[in-house]
Length: 185
Image (cartoon, rainbow, N blue to C red):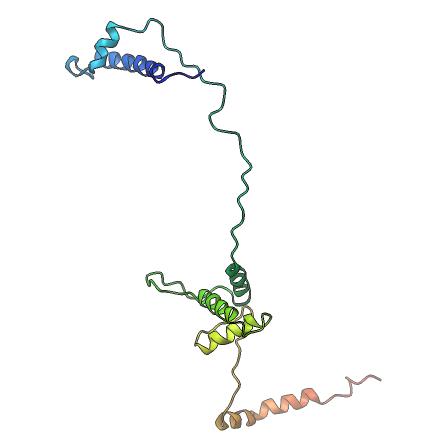
């Protein structure tokens, strides 16, 4: 059963009139402060007490099975692979700068740029992106691995590599020479 707006006002007035009456008896509300409708309600009370019956029909529908599709972008695959290979950045993001780009975002942008050109083979695109960022001065460190060492070039470095510590050379010789106990009999 649906009640009209007038009918829904009756319980409010009835309960409000009781509250106002009780507040006037206790002295909280003075006779001069009573609301205008109070005298009208006491002079013309409703013929029968208002009754509010709740409808049996639910206003809100039952639980609906709304399937929300997953939002998955192509960049998400690149980011997932980036974080798997290179991990999370050690330095915090500087959000005070409006044009701040994280290393991951730079990687994704460069990856998309190289992919749109079509110069690089799709299988090597991830590694080529890392090389391009390294050439641009962005250092990437793999998770759980040691850093990549650059090839040593130059006469001074070559001489330093050739001149080994004599103790290291003797240890290498001992390891490479088979002993009698190591040969099978």
